Image (cartoon, rainbow, N blue to C red):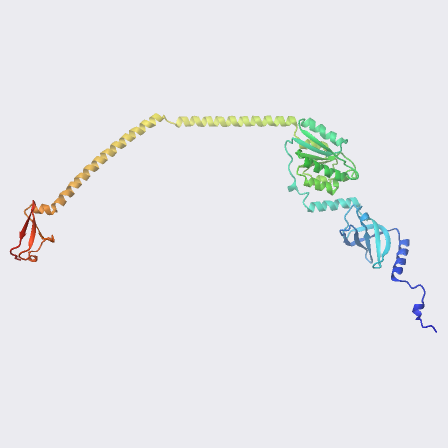
Length: 405
């Protein structure tokens, strides 16, 4: 009797790798080319360039991937919530056994990829402020040199040159021939704008082309062109020949012209109009100067009337000075006489108080010898003291014989 368990005796036992391989082969055979509609979710775009996302509807979801070689062909930017139609094949990712949709084409549902890409780019550039009016620069009034970015053999260059020659024949022009439609046109237009900036002689740049279909004008809706215009140190006029729709180049440029002809008229003044304008300004300036001269002449005349002869002013001042000197002299003499009189009075009064004046009336001054002390009281003396007697004229020495008080 066999001892092998019954479940080990079953045929066709598969490994996990075999199972996932068979499932993958069957799925890829039955679903090698399918179109699926769904809503984008969990969208990721890592640095590898591959796109990872989930497609879902109200009841189900499936993981999906778009490899870099296909992702680079997308004309719009996928984002969560966008309903898309994708083409691809269904397979299994062996490492995890996950069912996965490998997509090669993706289109937004209900709107063209090109239009969606355009709207997304507009929104991005608007958020960055590239359309803001405050960043737009004025055009030079009278440019010495004009740079032109357009096709060399197109109608646009002929229209621009014709108008420039008619309006201002002495203006210098630098033409940077550029491809304006087809694959790579946007890159060439951007490179031409940078070249004119590096050249550095142009005062303004006209970028554009003649009319065409929306597809023909697509180069002027590319991000590389928009950023080249925004980065230009020279003011840029967009002259994309279409009246109805605004291209991104129109929105970023410092000025927008509906046609190349209008752009040429916009960047240079009419020579005859400029000459007439200069003549008008000359006449206005001449009239203003003449008016100022007349006003100044009248002012000088008025000053002359008010200004007196300097000799008269000198004579008047001389008489005033003489009168002042006379008054000062009289006042000084009067003051001197008053001072002398007062001095004499004071001298008389002082003299009356002088001891010498008293001595002159017969009195004498007695002082002790040798101390020189003045004797005012006889009782301070004793017989035998020596004293000096001072008279109005001369002195004498005496000895006290008797004291009485």
